[in-house]
Image (cartoon, rainbow, N blue to C red; front, side):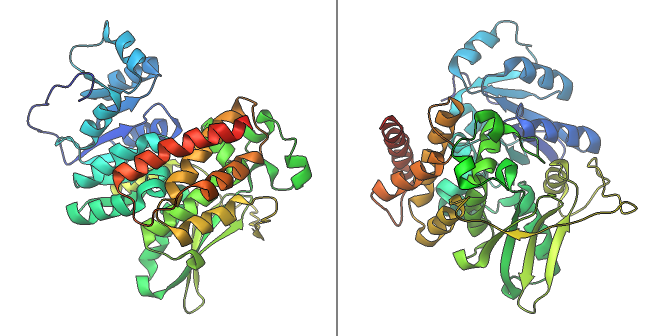
Length: 396
């Protein structure tokens, strides 16, 4: 059970009530701006954060959320004193699961970073919610379980990642059987033109200096190594039921074309917009309708150059790792994701050179005992094992 749990009264909420899991992060904050822009009948009924309780309280007051979850135990204890009586305060990962499946919630925006968001994502899928999915790690770790739960319950999974939202939108121009492949675009991050030898000496500050997107630290490092694209390859496999050879990646520095679909007749359909997460977030909330957006628009009166180039796999070996995880399936995603989370943290703590992040993920993947059909308990055990093994690898 969560640290504290009170069952809500029967729901009288309108049909677009939203819980934002990870509301103090980049995606969470953008979601609140989008909901404020949309107005009724969309409204926030639940929020969550790990430790950023001051921002969480401000968000709860601003949105009128009826339930708030703090997942860090000490932060939950500290914030109880003085918490407003008209807002339920739940705690722990169990509180996230309860909020994700609460009857008064229609839409769950899954924006918790990393594997920490997996159980609440799975709970929303089991409960038949509309799942606006920004937590790609849930599908990387447990794609078969999440998609099976959604199929059984009737839950909708609508991607919030800009690349997968682009694919989701482009798919509406054709039939599933007509798709030859999808092409994920990547900005190339801060090291697009660096040599592998230069990347060996990249600092934390270099890696966090993303040329296009404003993201959290972990996701920004994933972009620098292109591990984010490896994880997105796996995410695309589960979202769209694709094989590894149907998922390609190209570098697109402008981040205007968010992804493309190539159909069997040779036609390519792309989704374009300025690099702003408001658009895919809003589309996930309003689908199948479109509403006037808060996202900035392309200025067609101004010159615009769009560049595309192949990925240098020597510079960015993470891409090959993503394809391998899709080809092998089973337990591979859980192991690689856990290893990456630990390695990224080590890099941010200046304990590991940047290229060793991907090298560590591969080493741990090759060392694990492959399971072609893991259960949830198996995945949780492998996640813990991979984290421990990665720390040992870093130590050597």
